[in-house]
Length: 56
Image: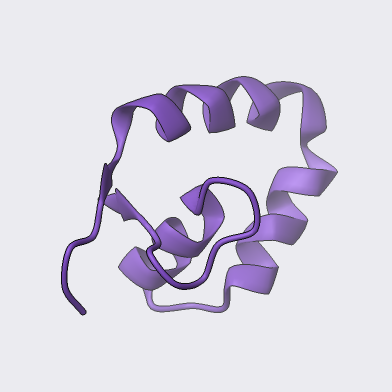
């Protein structure tokens, strides 16, 4: 899994998850917003541990 190089708002975590799963990044961002307390911690962990995609 990686974070997005093109479809990113803050760090590209949601865009990268959406690209990996083949779905819209809007849906992933909506899930993250609706589950704020837990997703905030998960987002920070993923932002620091995922690699950036180098080629698309």
